[in-house]
Image 1 (cartoon, rainbow, N blue to C red):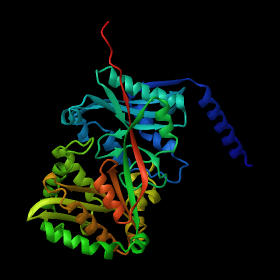
Image 2 (cartoon, helix red, strand yellow):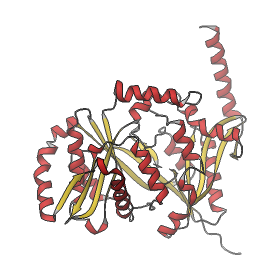
Image 3 (cartoon, rainbow, N blue to C red):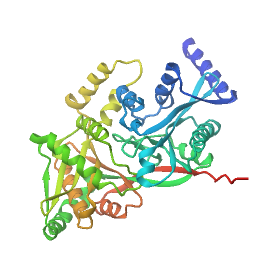
Image 4 (cartoon, rainbow, N blue to C red):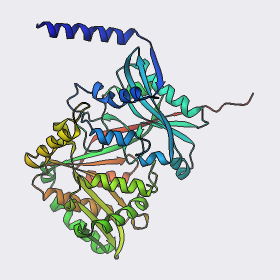
Length: 408
């Protein structure tokens, strides 16, 4: 073995030994050095994981920047990191989402940005710190992980440890055990569904459902159209109006602020394909929408953005894998909604049919991901399964309820 490799092995063994014996401390992120360690920690913990997909550095900065991320207009919170001596071993955010509490008439806090080694002591210290931060402000419970709203990373992956699709979180299999070991219990699961081109052909998805879809459309006077690429500004105004109306009864959902909706449109616009976006109408009234996007994570997986590498260089590599030697063969359906007035008319099934047929008609697309869908949304779960999809991933949110302190 070369001397350099031997030296690296010795250093690694020393770090591992030190990691196990040094005490865990958790401290608030208060300066630039702390923030840099917090910011870069995912690249450290997942450096040998073949499935993890790193985000663009600019996207992670915008997510964590309390001035740039519009969700922080109605949230308050702190970033924390766990350390063993001088080695960072985990991160977490504790926060209060005031719009959530107002909209759902709850009194809870949240945790997010949860990353940690397979180390129960460190995990418990992080989760206890977040819980105490929430509890000390008089709230009844803490829920998570969520970074930071239902429009972003939701849940910890508990089934389906494969490469994540765009805008979905990923973690090691041991995370759930660490969270449960810290005294948290399940609050809600969300499902992701997979359908391959081969699976759709084997289930005769198109032929089997075309007649049913047309019958539902005729019976309930449903029409569907593609988004108008010549009027995208007006179309996105309609999308934003439907989005907030369609999701307002969902568990954990909070209507987006105008700035958040603008940010969502801007971020999705980077990956937007007008052939995958549809509006549905019932008797000429806007009733619902669906949008699929190419899975840009396949590109990021190749380009592998990372600290120390100029983002311009990463984007050039991404362009190569996106346009010149394209690697994308998967699409994700992250956005779908039907206004409450028009539910139980089959609008959701019709939209699902149209977007899946659009994907099947694109020879580049071999796989689709429909996620996430709440486990309690039995109608959408049933529709997805009836189209030949299978549940291939589950993400879970946990909670810890605080005991009321009785006055002595």
